[in-house]
Image 1 (tube, rainbow over the protein chains, first blue to last red):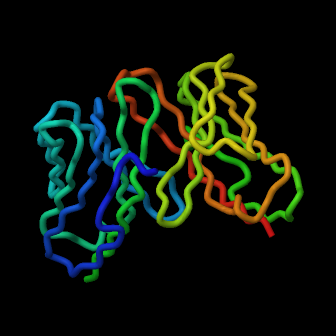
Image 2 (image 1 turned 90 degrees about the vertical axis):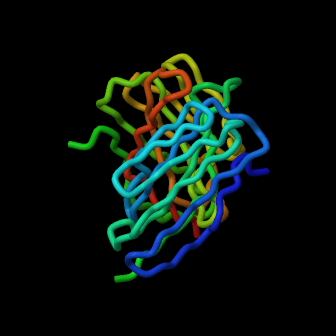
Length: 112
Length: 114
């Protein structure tokens, strides 16, 4: 059973379009992290959100943590080919600090 | 130089063989992790270690064992490899940070079991 449900699994869009990736759970998390992975490499942390309702921006990427701390979203504005990659959400639960629970990932392809 | 290194980067082996994957880190972190990644399944935790004397099973530890030889080294063994252990394996490290731990991943080992 996957603790974090991530959708969509695949996303193929044209350069300049906007997109949103969702990460949902029935469980409460102490924090939610978003990682990005490129072929042949390990995941790299993009952002951590900790407070319910928190919004963080990283250039064209906007991350939001749900008020109840059970879900998160990643929105990319005006996607570029360089945004192509696998995006993974991961959560930390208060009862198991130090462990990350990963979603299945969203493979994003942005075409020129 | 990379902070988290994994050897080998690629390995092809046969069913029944014993395989060891090694991970070394220069970040000085106490916590180390082994994950496997399969297409469409994300990252699943195999084992983790919060210090040299602490080893814990993750969600998919059956068929695997680990050894924490030093703070900087954490190895994963497949005692008798089987084809459904074909996957991409990642080592990661972190330092205690409460709910905001960042994990730093190695480049991965692609293992194929024939």
